[in-house]
Image 1 (cartoon, rainbow, N blue to C red):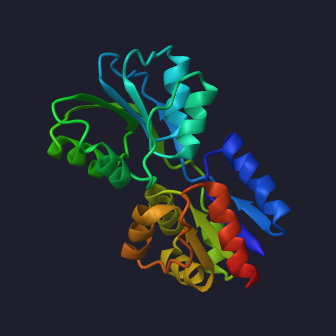
Image 2: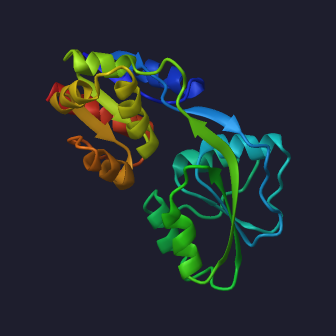
Length: 240
């Protein structure tokens, strides 16, 4: 059973391949995200500093950013683990691992406070708009841009030919880039049809909403927003 995975072409795709092989399926690595650092660093005078990805944490660590007196917030456990690995204390993780979850957790804490949001160029406005509506002074630093790698789309070809058993989408952008890659190959509709004959697993409600908006039938949205949980739940659905 071929299972497509779209993580960036670094240790994350290698770990995903190992995990999927251990679960008894054939991984189809098809990276849909390529990281282009901007060279920007977060402000160091904020009272709250928010990180939304492991990539962002790695970049600020390389740049020598220090948290100072800021309350450091991570969008989820994966980002929190990366922060700790790079020597940063993690003060807050929302119960729901999402932009909306961060806003809900911080809404009563940030009125009149300086909040730094450090993330990619494709960050959801739900986070910044929600914090501003709560009364925070929000500054956003774009740490990196996310582009689609040249040559992506092997999974789209497999979906179009009916040879894809499942797909694991880890962000709204991976959904959009999958469909763009299929369109570039002249097979968007066929790939979409093949995807809807497969088991589609996604991380989180925002990714699920994006997929459905593009006509993709979503089968698995695990309660815990991390890749291993997503992979296991999707393979379980295949086995079922």
